[in-house]
Image: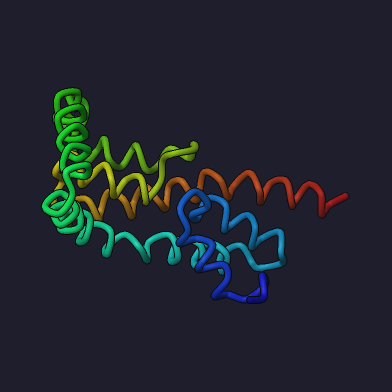
Length: 155
């Protein structure tokens, strides 16, 4: 696939760890106009969110029902995280938004979906928090790239 195609930028935005925060700067450096790069990157980043939010619970139940190892893992995970979930319980959707909006490794839409699942945040508010956090993280990582390209282009 051509790394300059819009589909490639969308798919790059949809991948864990890259997400929009890296897809957008990559697209801008490849010659995309910043608004187009932003839309493609964010669109790609949001594509897996609804399927992840809908499927994490049933998949974990199926795995737990059919594997003692998975059942122990999910029991451990839920017991450990929900026991230490004071911030998520107190702040809820706002904590999820801030978690996704922070453009640091291991945060983002994919991790936000996992956090929403683990902490039992329902789909509509989780989707809203993750979408808003994705846009903020994308802006935080895109604006410096625009500044650097403007400085380098002006020279």
